[in-house]
Image (cartoon, rainbow, N blue to C red):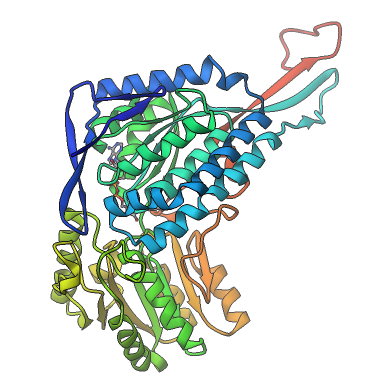
Length: 492
Ligand code: NAD
């Protein structure tokens, strides 16, 4: 069985306790590797290493252009190894090779983009209102940044944090999900190959409540960039508060995907499927509430069910598979339990509704693409994140009701709108409480465009130029240009 030790200060290390934990392939249901189970001692070692690399050695001596060049180099290496890295992702999280290979080929863009920004972090000269002083700002790195990721897109989510953090001059510890740790341990080799000094990028593995918590609490960690569940985000935020750490949280969602009767319905059907069955519904931006205008409700549901029925399930390593397994056994149980919840609440099953027993699904943790109609937005199935291939269809009368239902959840990560009316598109974009609104498309993200949540979907943003400021702190420098120091008892 393959063993994956941690990567700290440029060295491969077993956990201080000598313990390992199993990682499983969701398609076969079998354990395929062992990963080091880090604890408090390992957290200390990792943070000390990252802090040392931040304060001494070659990293702080590099100028910003040299940092940028290293980032671009690692982008090139990721592009070269995209397919191989994607295979690690699929083996651990069961997402489709077709999607993950594309994702890995796109990830280099983050390193090129933030690599380009590294030497454009400029301070300002402030035309200060007081005589005899010269005032300017410096934007300086924070120190050790902790990047904690969820299991659904491990390298993409890590990249959203690592690329800007390194461009800004910080050092990084990646704490991948205990369900999908191996890809980060392969990925980190490319940083070494690109020439990043030891200790600048580290990977510490283990469970959230063990090494994760110890890392968050460590006094030398200055920022925690977290992607995961709402419950995990709350714990991390609480643990970071006494240390006055910067925290960004990318959490869950219950996003409305809203179809008006004037929409191009062929595209809207595809958009509904993209929203909930792509990635087996295991995306934070899943369009898990499909709001359909009453005038087209029945015909739209019929077309959607017919299309969703054709989705090919099976081995995620086959290029033509469209729906893969659920990533983890607890998640598999959770998805099935929500199907029961919906049934018990009185929702009507229009498709699926249980584990997939098709022969092509082998021993994997597969759930049939599931559609419930007759859902009322007050039901738990409409309010709580399932994070699986389970869609709730909710009818609405008009724009006003679509906005009311769309916003009537605790979350606010994303929303989709399907309409051919330009006027309506802008009204909906303005009124929906979500960090991202897509009109006539779904699940589009880019390194250039800010991403993040309203309400309980999180705090802060990732991606885009402005975001680099989240990995910097501003210093205001005052230089007296007069020869004398005036009255010391008065404020200057
Ligand atoms: P999770 O909260 O269980 O775990 C996420 C990460 O946090 C893991 O690495 C885990 O080990 C760590 N962790 C958990 N408790 C911790 C603690 N007390 N201290 C430190 N670290 C801790 O979430 P998950 O099940 O891995 O991921 C699924 C969730 O992630 C879903 O809710 C999904 O919507 C969300 N998600 C959000 C985004 C986004 O960008 N908004 C993207 C992907 C996934």
